[in-house]
Amino acid sequence: MCPPPAASELLRPRLLGDTLIPPQGAAEHWRDLAPGIVRQRLVIEGIPARPIGDEQIRRYLSALSREVDMVQLLEPVTHRSDLYGWAGWIHWETSGAHFYAWEQPQLFFSVDLYTCKAFDVDTAVSFTRRFLDAGTVVAKSF
Image (cartoon, rainbow, N blue to C red; front, side):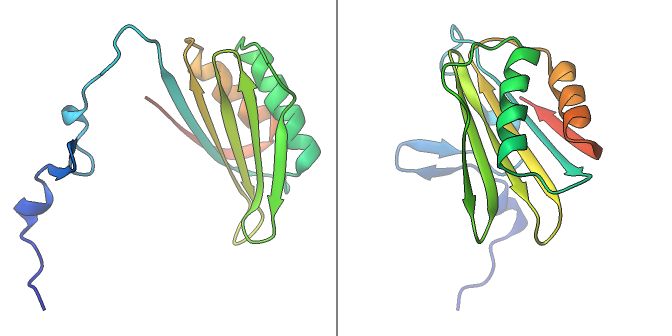
């Protein structure tokens, strides 16, 4: 049995093939490889008032498109897993968004927007809170 690594070893970047993987939480090691391409990401998570299903996911993703001024290329697609709950996706001209909803072990949703066109984060978050009647919402933009 090997002894556990020293804490200082856990903070060092490691190589995976030719890729340098920074230690967890070390954003300063990130390097923008395509500064000429706009990329915006936003994760919104929350606790909805009620379970979220197929029709509500589809309506939400289409309405979100209008709220953040994205051109919708296809109708939203959804799928339900008996083990993990609902998932949905919408394709925008400038990328898209994924949606995930759980009923077990608790009511919970997670939305992941990835775009190549800038959008207003506050608009997306406040719209999501209202549309899903979520009392508790957190968001991270990067």
